[in-house]
Image (cartoon, rainbow, N blue to C red; front, side):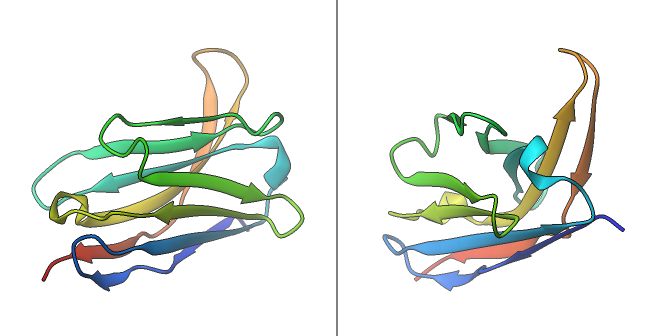
Length: 121
């Protein structure tokens, strides 16, 4: 059974930091690109960051570049999102996503249940 379980969300003041974790099970974690998405109230789910399966290359949404860092530990089947210099506009439910590409346009993916991040004074 595939599971992605996020943790580490919470309430933080502007300028603060949080570290999200996503523990994966039920699939070959090291074969999947891992992503973080977020969804603010009343808005669509947006891409935040990705880390590739093999080289560990990363990419970020412009809104979080220089503040967020994605990393993975294949031995622990876990992906992380270190979030620094948090802003109120970072408030959202953060979702972990695993993608396995069969071609440039065909992939399978799995989603976690999400963890709430609230940035407020």
